[in-house]
Image (cartoon, rainbow, N blue to C red; front, top):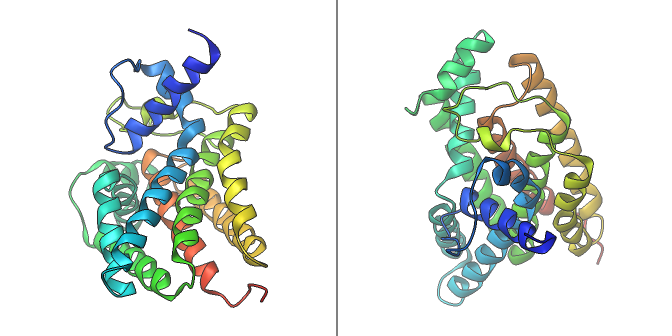
Length: 254
């Protein structure tokens, strides 16, 4: 297998893992491929953002902005299977109801949705929809939000320790350490999106995401000693809504 073919295998492993898009029949799946597929997490986010933007553009021709945003968001939830939203809900339940690291992990593994998880989902989804409706360039916001948020999430694999080591974890194959070269590959789509942001919006987004990442890393280390798969999903959701809220600020140059 040459280098290009291997990278294609890794990309389709990431695409299949994080979305419901069926892969080509020739793609090889395995633990080793999934271990290194996380480098393409932000690229998958870029593709999801492009799909979200395209859907919004189509719906906006037929409906008001609020309805177009709702329909686009609903379609993306179907495309991704609500994978990251599930992580957010589990984290809210675990951190809201758990006192010790083990108790928190046990609650996060429970598939049932608790009141903390429901409240977290309602709050974050509501903020997403409200901010997108308020942003002048929804297409760019969707692309940047989906891409940058996934880079913030995947960067935790490079710097932090995975603590949920049981084989039942849904992201166990992605929990190996990420090399600096793999992190640089993951950064390319995120950097491309930052270059597209207008005015001071890119600087504001970087600052906000760095603060969010710093806070979440300290929280995860203090409460769990590291991150879990649910932490990555929650990070993606919180980073995405942070991008949208940043783009609502009157920071763009005329």
